[in-house]
Amino acid sequence: MTFICAPILAGDVESALADARQARAMGADLVEFRVDHLFHGEHDDEGERAVLELVRESPLPCIVTCRPTYEGGDYDGDEASRIALFERLAALGAGAGGTPPRYVDIELAALERSANLRQKALLAVEHPDQPRELATSMILSMHDFKGRPAGLLRTLERMRREPAAKVLKIAWMARSLRDNLEILDLVAERDRPMIALAMGAAGLMSRVLAPKFGAFLTFASVRPAAVTAPGQPTIEDLLTTYRFRAINPATRVYGVIGWPVEHSLSPLVHNAGFGALDPDGPGFNGVYLPLLVAPEWEPLKATLGALVDHERLDFAGGSVTIPHKEHALRFARERSQEGWVVDRIATIAGAVNTLVRLDGPAVRAGAASAPSARWLATNTDAPAVAACARSALGDNLAGRRIAIIGAGGAARAAAAGLAEAGANVSLLNRTMEKCGRLAAELNVALATAGLEAPPISAAPIDDLERTSWDMIINCTPVGMRGGPAPDSLPLDESILDRIGPDTVVFDTVYTPRLTPLLRAARERGLRTIEGANMLVHQAEAQFQLWTGRGSPEGLFARIVRERLNADSGNPA
Ligand code: NAP
Image 1 (tube, rainbow, N blue to C red):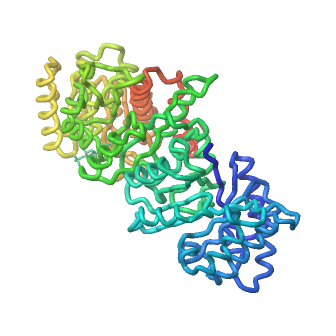
Image 2: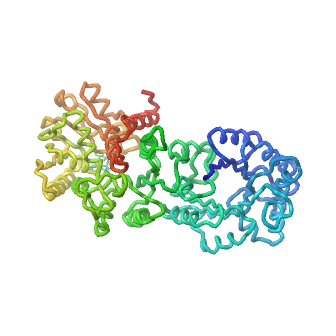
Image 3: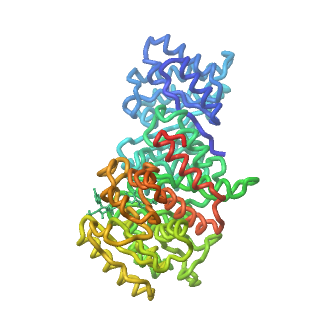
């Protein structure tokens, strides 16, 4: 079992103990008291008494760490006093009538500073040559806050040569997702219990997947502000979102590849779906992570290559979001000799938002049914737009007149999905030249795919009121919170008074749920479709491809709606 340890930066005894009790209530197994602020070194009797009290009263087995400044902590007192504190703590269990800490964390750098210090440190912990009976063991640690340590493997070798080290801990600041893979390999190849963590936003994988690789523990804080290392999740994140207790060596790994990805709703939705598949059992054995990959082709190529080629990781599928949808298409095409198949809709859309490893429960669909196919690269955005359109216009979209505003990635997916479904699509955009180019490209793609769809036309935005439309879709970021024009509409509002009463208005923007365009349309009694519906449809299709099963009825819609309402402060 991999423990959850709540690190607590102890400012004073009372609040540190309150946090420890909260950690226990939330489901942590251990606490780590970081006492760098409580104990100041030589002659700090008060500090020492505070640490002893903390350990005595701890509601959970504890680790005591007094991290020196040279290792990224705040303790700037002398080393002899710090080690003497550990000796005093160990003595709590050696006849002093108390419960000693289960572990003390001592840095490799400290032990290597002087033979004398090392000898003293060994007096404070249990080890094969320890004459006393002690209940405190040593976690031997090494941290690098800048990046992967130079000489990592040699350092690890020196750590392994320390017989008193019960647990080895290694942590460094992740520069990219690939650091996690090396860290998880170190855990898999451990010679004794090991904690290995990638710090920073790119390091979440190493923390969440700790049980899959058999790590001794992972750190998780009681609340977001209480993190002691960058990138640390909260206990709630770990247990509720990532279903940490259900992760084991056989767990398949999924995730959303993008930049940024920390605000993506996909981990919430897919992890909940995995957990809900079998309400009486452990659910689907998968976990879904945010996978931060720097923009540009090279990082995507290197990282996605590392993920799919890493056998131990068991990466079985992914969502791909901005800015990597076109890169993912290129990646899949470059790997066509290795069994990567790009299906028709992704080819027409010129973008991939879904990767599916074709084994186990995955559905082998369309072009991917070739026996040699190993991975399917597809696009669920395009059919999601068509599904939204069908929900308002009926199953048959053939001949329906649909105006798409915009000429970027969302417009491209929408046009591809609707044209494939037989609709009469027009692209309208502020920059006419851009939508003209996109329409021409899409028409070539449709013809190459052998589809006899009506050609997609392009027009300036002012043409919106010259024709009557069954549906108008906004595929620009206008109206999006934090976007270029959050309070605006992508069309002249008065047009909504002149379009027919049966025209449906669909906004792909989903933050906020009710955009200025949707509000204005509703005020005029027009039917509307929220961008959240598209998000839900595309996620449901991905889930089906990965698990071979439908997501629980209404679950994704409920989670997305709740989260978007919470973000807008709107309880409705
Ligand atoms: P994009 O590639 O950056 O395209 C932006 C398009 O919007 C361009 O055609 C641009 O016109 C136009 N535009 C930008 N700012 C404008 C402004 N102030 N006034 C008028 N036109 C403007 O973006 P994208 O990836 O297509 O995404 C667009 C939106 O789609 C996003 O904001 C997102 O909310 C939404 N989306 C939703 C989902 C979903 O699941 N619901 C999925 C994907 C995207 P020019 O060509 O003239 O520059």
